[in-house]
Image (tube, rainbow over all chains, first blue to last red; front, side, top):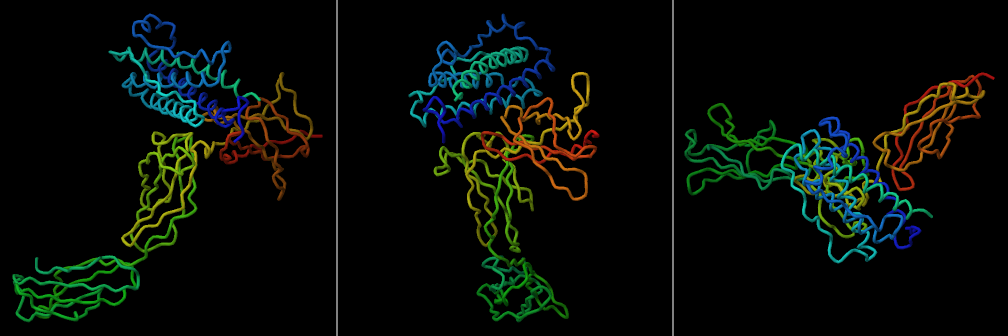
Length: 174
Length: 308
């Protein structure tokens, strides 16, 4: 399999990662659209205070930012971030019957993506000795908190994926 | 229970024979000391080879049937009673073949149903009730080692296809898949496929549109057509290439192919055609550069070229 310009990783893996980012972005957009349509939660900026109170963690992607772009570091952070979002989405379970299928699809695609990266890192011997854990998750104590939390998580996820996508695009450039 | 038929098995291969015995219990109130046990295979009355009285007073008759040449038959144990023949017990006999190995197994990832749809050829009819099961497992490598198995996919009766739902799939990892056919006489297994679900994704065709002349869009040259197309929405996240084919609506004209074409084009001018002629246009797309399956051709768009 032809290697990507950053030598250690196959080009097909990087192309699949790009595809998976776009797929998760599409799922995330679907969740945002349904939260807006069903619950009028359309603007995450209206939920910043609540977000602080709920303590919704964000995933660092410093090794994926243009200033300090570093492939394996970026992949590790991308994988840890995906694991974090798996946890956050699990914490949103029971968000609402209409949103459940969309949330399930998003979880499946994020899990697929995390496994794909982890197994590729293992294959090239660059996987961390200890897999990342999800850490403490926020507790959503009401239906509204789950929906507001969903709006915030979806928005944070899109920003996270945007940074990841730009980095992956850079790594696939010949 | 007056009479009871005992069989080593109720299913044999076509052409094999079978030995049955029937025991008539002593408390069967109609039983005379020397009542004769008769057998009926289908509608044909037969005598057993041997009839004996057992220690408990019951009577037992044994019969070895002729080679069975019908897939299904009914064996009855009877008793002559006055002028009539009384049926005391009945057994269903099946005759057929072990299942052939299913073949031509193929799978497609369907993004509409979000499932992996596999189909196969069941092989020749074996005359026996046969269960087909689509079996699969996840694998880290090229299906040399089995990671964890996936829930069996059981098709509806008579179907030769089955769908594995998204939640059981790892879209970007290898999985081994095969079909198992099973009946009372044995099991047949298809060759195993090793695939990555997303690498067998089959997209829906794009939608072709005519581009009407407008202030921004100049009318097409003679022998040219103006058109645009849109990808199938659920596949927008997938990088693709497309191809176009066109055919003049004149007698037995053949299709001409144009491609590869970029998946998203707001305006495309197709030239080199006959002037004032109606053309059928179709388009299809495929995941690319990553592997995938070509979509079907889109429905035809009929456009007529400008006059000379």
